[in-house]
Amino acid sequence: MALPKFFITPFPHSDGAKSVLGLPEPPLPVQDGWLQDGRGVYLKSGSQLYRGRWQRRPCDWAFVYAPWCRARIPADETEVEYIGEAWGQRATLALDPTVEWTPRKFRVSRRLNRRPCGFCQTSISPQNPDHHWTLPNFVACDACYEAYVEQRSLGFLPGVAEATKTPPQPSTVPEITILNFDSLRSHSRIHA
Ligand SMILES: [Zn+2]
Figure (cartoon, rainbow, N blue to C red):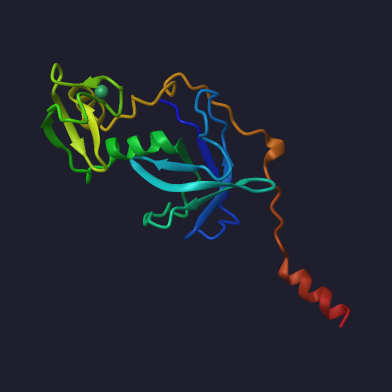
């Protein structure tokens, strides 16, 4: 499994409480909208997912935490993965052990005679009634529940397993200006 990576710039770390700066690897063409200014995105480190949105900057990108995302990437973390918004929601449901799932049997109602599984789109219907349900009204067929939720797997992500790694080009790496305060001070003393 290879997800595109986001290389976090350790310094300047930006405002680590609200955003982190870095360079994202381009996603596969099939992953539409995974890397787009203003779009929602999830950063992933191990099984931890961080919800936020992209912000394009002149030389790099900022990941801006969603106001309701309490978790923060540890300051020494410099390489994380990212998942586009729509798939990131499913990834959270599959990976987060605090998400509560309820086994249910599908019943036809006046409005609904089938529902697609949120992972594989298979119809959950009177012919295939067993499924698991969770908030926000998300359903998984039993096969997907066992393969992804029970195994904490992201195997449902399209094309991810075949993704080829494309590191960012060196020319796009922003130069970091380090101010030498001692020389500034002696400089101002000379001209004082
Ligand atoms: Zn399914």
